[in-house]
Amino acid sequence: MSPWALLLVLPYLALCFPSLYNRMTPDLMGFPFFYWYQLAWVIIASAIMLFVYRKLKS
Image (cartoon, rainbow, N blue to C red):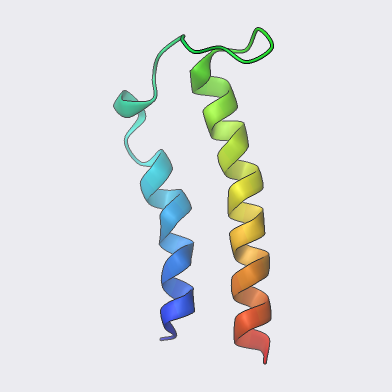
């Protein structure tokens, strides 16, 4: 297993414990923290997967 593949664990760990991010503030454009935190991790996870894919492809 490549050490780059371990980066794929980050999104899982970031979203594994909802009690840490289940709150209303701070809000972003009217969206509570709970929702934009998860949406931000969708984008971050996609970037991580692209990065790991390119590293492991070569």
